[in-house]
Image (cartoon, rainbow, N blue to C red; front, top):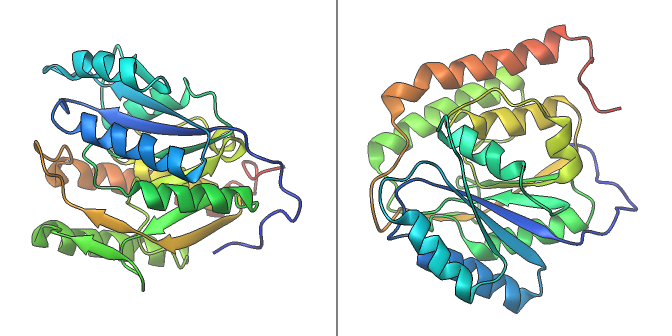
Length: 255
């Protein structure tokens, strides 16, 4: 955890949810409805930006139908090139909110946790990271092989950067707009964006905190993350930010 947040934070007006989606026709209706209903119940002003990242199924048609019932839904299409990271950045380029949260289309992330993020951002934190592996967290049906690789990867990152965060690879994180803008430009086309943004935010001096969260495995479709394809990409972006931390002489730190 970084230093204490701003003692007099600027009030936040709109919370933008960014959901990258590729072939998620079965998952999106429940995911979007749950987020919307939870935020309404908790009084969180919001928009839900879903990025169709070149889907080959009826994802786009499903979004058009959902939009008729959920007016805060903002469907956008990433014309390409495609990739998880590119879809998220495309969504970031379309948000209207002064804070945002990245959530998965498969309902693995809890809307209640996203509300907790919003409240912490309003306390002055610039970044709020969830961990699935600290006291108070809950993980449901995590594949054993992926869990083992996840813990090794996060231990490597934690040791390399000397940080207490033990779940850097999790995409489910929230940011004030200033932190997002301060971490540009983004280099990662794929799932390695999930480590690029938080590591840049930490290295560049934005105030961050960590809370326990709940995660559950998807109910529909197939996971998009392919571990064999991503190992070297994660390593590349980690080393890129590590070089910035130790050799850039603070050129990219927040002013």
